Length: 507
Image (tube, rainbow, N blue to C red):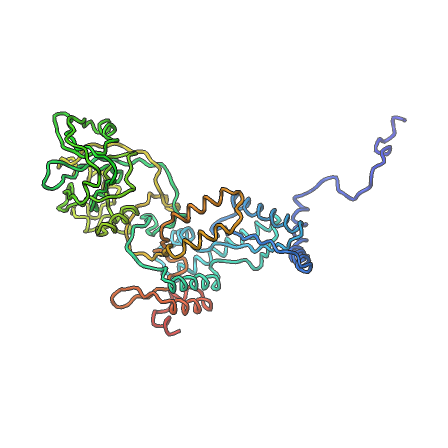
C-alpha cells in the first residue's frame, strides 16, 4: 500500500446520510416542531385506540402556575413522559392530559404585593392573568422538553367547569352532613392572615422560651406544676391535664432557702431538679393521676381558676407530667376541653396580637411572640415561676410568609372525616401500592387525620357557597350550593364577588 492511499477507501463501510455532527441546537427544535405539526401524539393515540388497545391512564398531579419551570417540575414531567411513552410502546393507549393548579396564596401574595388595596374582584382578575401567563410559559417549556400530551386542552383548576365540580362536591358533602362550622384551633399564619392546610406548613428550627409554672391548688398548700414552650398561651389556660395511670409525687422541694410543695410525675422528678434547681427534700405521698381529677387550681396571674382533668396524651418524655391546657390554642387541648366542659378561649386576632379577652390591659395589642418575655416577668414577679430555659425544637412555619404559625381558634368550616374515613380506608386496600410500604404510610395518615379545615381568609380560590341569615348563622344548603355551581359553570367564580347575594339567589 502506498503512502498516498486513503485508509478510508480500504474499509468496506455502509453508506449513510447521517451528518458528522448532531447539531442538536438546531436539529432538536426542528424535530420537535415537525412532531407537533404532524400531530404525532394524536396519531399514536388514535392508532392504539383503533387497535382497541387497553388504556393506561397516568393522572398528572399539577404544578403550580406561579413561576418558570424548575428542576423539580421538569423532572416530574419527564418521568411521567417516560412512563406514558413506554406504556404506549408496550401496546397501551396512553393519553396524557396535563394540568395546572391555578389558585392559592402564592399567586395572590405576588399580585397583592404589586398593588395593595385592590377590590376582591380585581385581585381575582389579576390572579387569573398571572396564572395564565405562567401556564403558557410552563407549557412551552414542557413541549420544548419533548413531553407528549394534550397541550391544547389541559385541565386548569380555575376553569369554570372545574370550579363548578368542586362546588358540587361541596353540595354532596352538605347533603350527607359532612360539613360543619365550629370554633376550633387551626394552624394560623399571622404573616398571611389565613388558616393553613397541612400542605402549606413547613418545619424549621426555632428557639422558644420554656418555663416551669406553678398553679396553686385551691384550699391547699400544694401546687401543680406545668411546663410549656409557649408562655404566650398562658392567658388562655383553662385546665391542667394529668395521666390517669401515672404515679405523681407530692413532695416538699427546696431551692436556695425557698420551699414549695409541688406535684411532679415520678419519672420526671430528677429532670425537674436538674432544670430548675428545686430538689426533692421530702416525699409527702405518691398518688395516681386519677386521684387529682376534678381538683381546681388558681391561674398564676389572672383572677380565674383551672380545672385538673385526665388525658391519655400526657407523657413522661419532657416537662412535669402535668400539661397546660388552652382549648383555644391546640388540637389535643381542644378535644380534652370539649370532653371536660371547658370553654374555648382564644384572645388573639388575625395579625397574631392579643385582644381585650387576654385579661391584662398591658398585653392588649402586643404580638403573642413578643409577649413571652413580659409574661415570664409577670410570673417571676408574683412568685409563680419555678424555672426557665431556652428550648430548641422543630416548629411549624407558614410556607409562604416564612413566619412561625400559631394555633388559634376561629370560626371555620370543616369536613368531618368520620363519615368518609371508613370508605377511604377501604378504598386504600383496593389499590396495588408500589412500593408496598406506601400503603401503610397513606393508611396511617388517613386513619389519624383530623377533620379538614376548608375555609380560607383569602380571595383567590373557590368560594364556599355559604350564606348567612340576619343573626349571622350559616345557611348550609345543598340546593343553594348546587344552584351556585350551575351559575359558576356559566360565569366563573368571580360571579360570587361581583353580584350581590340577592342577585345570586335570584339567578
